[in-house]
Amino acid sequence: MQKTSKTKRAELYKDRNTQAFLGKFLSGEISELKPVYDPKLGYRYPIVEPIVGDAANVEDFLNRLCEAGILERRLYDKIIYCPKCGSANISVHYCCPYCKSFNIQKSSLVEHVKCGYMDIEENFRKGNKFICPKCHKELEKLDVDYRRAGTWCVCKDCSKSFDIPVTAHFCRDCHANSAFEDAVIKDVYGYSLKEEIREEAAVGWVIIEPMSEFLRESGFEVESRAFLKGKSGANHMFDIVAYKGDVKRKVTVIDLAISTEDAVPEQPVIALFAKIFDVSPDSAYLIAIPEMSENGKKMAGLYNIKVVEAKSQKDAIKALEDKLLEKD
Image (cartoon, rainbow, N blue to C red; front, side):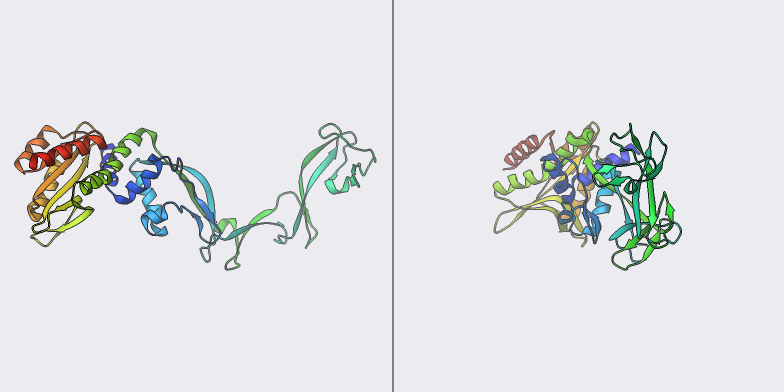
């Protein structure tokens, strides 16, 4: 299970949306992603919506990052939806348990400690003073002369009294009333980046875009997460495709392979070879973070794939620069 999560993380780090989102944590723009309440739509994550392109995709995106062990979540709130129309624009009504009206008045029960008389607070008030209706003594100090003994409600429609109202929900959109038993309740979460994988995430996030920028500055036309059509007619995706030259454009393809253990195994080499065998670029590079296994290096040599080992963004760019200079 642990290896599966690591594999998921390695793939997610290569995703543009993941890179853009994690960048907000790594740059300090956000320390915790908190939802924002919209009366019509319920809770939203406005900072994520432009990244994934559609508000409907946000929940799935965040769930995938949680399942891969990148984010941790905490319960932020619970939201109620109308069981009839699905609206989150719900108000809570405290109702009379006898006639179900929400036209009730809530009061505090007050007890005079000395004489034991108990009544609602309003009946003790005489102007600016607090007077016991039974013995007519003035009550001055809470928990000395008198104490609060709970709450008491009176229904203004049926005139009955009670201590605990029943809860009902009213949809402001379709005007339907519903009981607690029918309520559609959903958990809402706040998200934060797990501290133990912060460094791992930083390496995966910062490599592709700075490397693309370096290649542009070196005179390449660059596309990241780009597709090239092979001889078979199939489209193959590479993390970076770089073009150079006007008359005869030379094509360089680059893939990123991240290991959360000791070294990148040979599988990414095999995957890249399968793509370049069909596409036939002028050169192919595999960025291995933090390093490539010995079997992987041998296989890359056989397949004419240049391996760039790096533990940081700076190391990766410097190593790629050295490889490009060797080629020139």
